[in-house]
Amino acid sequence: MMVEKKVKEEEVVALEITDCFPEKEDDIRISTSQQCYGQYCITLSETLTAEAGLCVVIPCSFTTGFGFTPRHIVWYKCKYTTCEYYDEIIFHTNKNIHVQNGFEGRVSLLEPDIRQNNCSIIINDIKESDSGSYRIRVNGERNLREDGFASIQRTTVSVEGLSQKPRVKIPTLKEGQQATLTCVAPGLCSGSVPEITWTWRGARGTDSYITGNITSFRTKNLTAFTQRHISTLTFNSSAEHHNTNVTCKIRFTGEKTTEGGSTLKVNYVKEVNVTWGTNVKEGETLNLTCSVESFPPSLIMWSKLGSDITLHNDTGSATLSIINATTEHSGQYVCTAKHMNNTLQENINITVTSARVKHCGSYSTVLPWIVAGVSLTLNAFCITYIWFLWNSRKKVNIHQEERTYMSLQKADVSPDYDVIAQHVN
Image 1 (cartoon, rainbow, N blue to C red):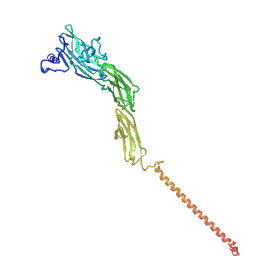
Image 2 (image 1 turned 180 degrees about the vertical axis):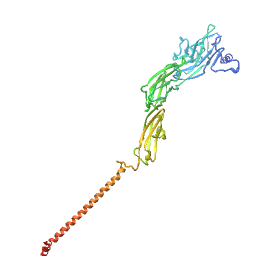
Image 3 (image 1 turned 45 degrees about the vertical axis):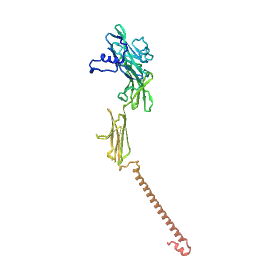
């Protein structure tokens, strides 16, 4: 019997039930992807979806009747209704057989040993034009004569645009330590090796390469026909890399590209920064602020030297406010920052000034002395002025008495007056 004899579809279904499955009805599992002709069966997937640039595997298996020896596997991409012409062949285990243009070197059997009854193929570097129907045929010998059988049902492959993204693996990053990022290309194909590049987007939003980096590429063989393409990027992480984006870009055959990225999180801590108000006086508010730039945010705590009591705490930045400060609040205050396994401290001395204390050079305390000095000066001036006026008045009286006496002495020259004017011995 020639296995390649054409039969009607109804006959195929009847043969499928009687010859390929158990006799008990409860054990029947009819697969729409399996076609049988007598003892000769082929199992195929009906529809498959693939993405351009990657690959597609068409699962296939077969069983044969007694005395049949498989020799070659033939796959067709259907152009015509019958799908059995030479110009439709995309794969043949006989290397002397010509295949369709564009499929050379892209199609392989997953299991090269035909005796394993595995007719699955992998098509690498798949393109949109590879969409269509595919058919399998098994050629061999039966009773020393060439024979063969083919699937009636076909597998439909739909090729869509590339949507899969690479996987970027990022370890824990610590400032000053070397780090290695890993990018795994999508797909498990053994076709053309993709081109993998790394870019880094800084705070300004521009793409650049990470300086001082080392890149490497390797291919990990999972099976004889499946591979995983991996690229690594090694660099020294720093605080400037924190919250920036790193991108891994994959370029496949046919200019198909995809990329994946992630935001870098770098563990780092800067120095403690403490600020406070100067010249704090009694009754005013004392504000002490301690901040630490870090990731993850540090726990900030305020305390007074010699005391275990935490006066205030917060994350990232903490402000200790003391309302109506007194001289008792003077002393040394300690800011403690805890970041992961590190502890940082900063001490400051605070003096709250009493309102009764006079400070040389302070305007409010010097003013009374200025007022007193001005008052004393004015008093001295007034006393001097009064003395001057009194003294001037006294001199005026003396001069007037002298002028009166002279007028009496010289007013008349009569003898009477001459007698009066004479001195008695």
